Image (cartoon, rainbow, N blue to C red; front, side, top):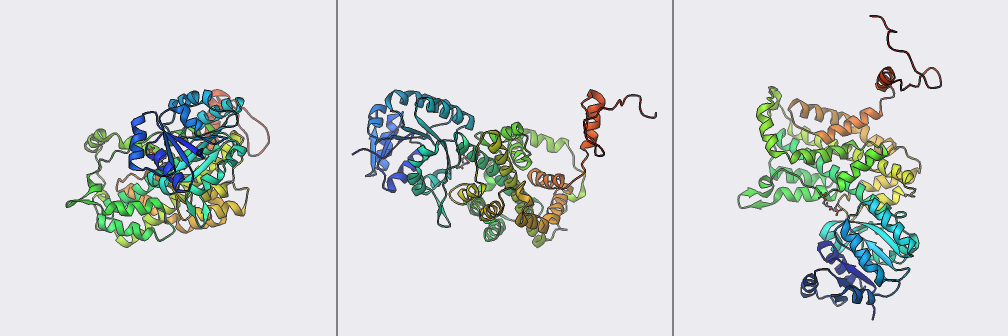
Length: 473
Ligand code: 6PG
């Protein structure tokens, strides 16, 4: 009997997805370039629905048609190499699925070149880490819709469910699934940085212990902030190694694999301000400069007396300020992510349903959060939204808490505590709500030194002024 689907690449994500599909009743052929990995998987998980293969041809021949071949290998050249190896073995109308964190432009290129050969290629964003892959990830499939119809049943079955709905929905053509996953990761960076800033303020200004922090985050997880990242943060605060908290022993250098960088490069390319996500990326860069930061503390001397004072803090008040600031900043970072998606839709000729994309994010993935229901509702209520922060619900949420964000940032600034992502969120809101900005001066300068022309408020057209020598000394 032929298998329903094949998985190539049995590292953590591939193996867990294969197990998830097998548990859901699908016959799964598995293959890995390093054959000892196949043996290991079969030894550890000899699933009745698994068929193991040591040769690519036999693996391909074991699949029912049209063949569904799931690549779960490292993004980049390994994907291209595998496609090359598969091409002589597969038939027209077979479907190759790339479930890795591939760069969306690679996906667009691969889809185009395979389409010319009449082979389908789906670029599928999968989020949720090991646990998600095993028991239900969020799935963002992009590519040919007909090809997707051969996968929809499997994907919906293995995906996470939120509020009774599968966290999987066809996104749009070619690289759109990987694009949405990339933006998910950008938002993930922002979420994590904002939480880390909340932690830093509560720890340094509020003087809260890890035990208290665990409780605060636990309370927050029963509020509008309810989310996976808040939940795991509360758990992290509780872990001890002997007498010490593990968190206090972890080096403060954050690593990254690149998707947050891609999101920012894209935003620059499309001219979209995603400042909270950018601040999160920069914070990771700066975190890496540990030795320089230790030196800087001794060189840049802070004479600010507030930086030492802890007794003028009302603990209850600071918890509320941080909570509200975290929530507004989070709204801004999601709004920025969706703004980027909206620009991408136009740039790459995709057709996004933002209400549905928000729903996918509600379960399985790293950024899953209760307020994605509100985001989905906001997009559902109007198809033509300039920005999520303008919607009735979110503008109200922001207006209720904006003073708290200002207060908290002032507090942090006075005490020399870096909160760059929250500061970026406030800057974004303030920039947006400034109908008359200082950009008139930039236009005047550009025209002064380069005759770049400017528009006027009092008449239509494009103007140049002969600035030099036309002012009083
Ligand atoms: C997910 C995650 C995952 C990502 C890790 C690490 O949605 O499951 O986004 O895809 O690889 O979170 O990313 P960084 O190493 O860049 O932090």
